[in-house]
Length: 334
Ligand SMILES: Nc1ncnc2c1ncn2[C@@H]1O[C@H](COP(=O)(O)OP(=O)(O)O)[C@@H](O)[C@H]1O
Ligand code: SF4
Ligand SMILES: [Mg+2]
Image (cartoon, rainbow, N blue to C red; front, side, top):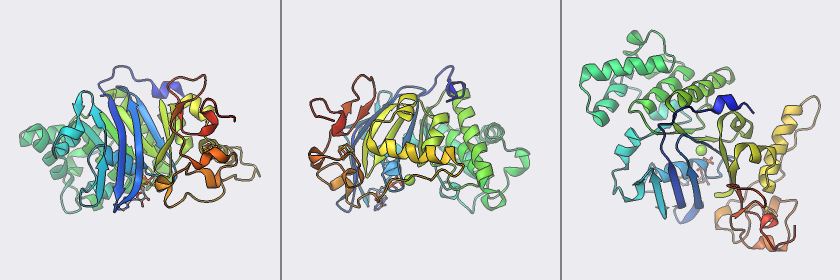
């Protein structure tokens, strides 16, 4: 753990609260009743294997899913005291201004036929109502902040003229263009070469520190969260199965799935001929719609009670650390 990397001096970040988020695609549940909170300036890491519902959770919460295909239900989603669920289709404005998003693939966020200048300045002129000159000056400053050198010249470039790492820096600049209070980074390094990944992680962490941003970082890489997150949320088959302080959860995960993930990461760390331990089996396709614990078919500790769905409960003796597993539910023998 490197606490210094996570220290945020003065927060200008916003609190973010998601309560009872469920998302269905064509009647099939992808995310089931997920709730979490983020304090101002806090960094939450959401981890889980591919298809566990991480992106759908984040994008569903901020209104970025296509209403033609996704059915989204929430009790509420609040950014500070603004209820995003009550914006009646105006989330797009909030998204551009108060929430910035960095996607896995930079090409998703950029238009291939427009220059970087046009894309950065259009965004700022639309949301901040800046004149062309002020928007250009601000675009130059932002490119500097994300480490793009020779920014004057590069403003006139098209996306294809940049490397993957540079493009991701530019999408980070776009996400920051309107001084957001919350940054959502959805696997922002997964599509990049290994050597560039660390640079982009460092860049986002340094921006978070200097701006005091609240941060949601989505990843399938538990080890990465050691550096990034104050709190960690573990998802499995569309459900949140454990959420708690990063130090406690990463040192001693409670949920058998989280423990299995950590054991497989640790076996990679130890290396030197140690066999890579993985969790046997695969997540069930109908996980969120299963009546019981979706991890039961793979869980080495499953018992009778696991045929019914475990509710979230506080880990005994802990605070702000919850787990959805019958082993930790009081009154049930472990
Ligand atoms: N647009 C969509 N249409 C239908 N199913 C979808 C769509 N987007 C995601 N899903 C399904 O929702 C589940 C969660 O996906 P996702 O949130 O992308 O997972 P993750 O980000 O953890 O990899 C998966 O089963 C996926 O197939
Ligand atoms: S509820 Fe049962 S099956 Fe699910 S993780 Fe806990 S012990 Fe395993
Ligand atoms: Mg995803």
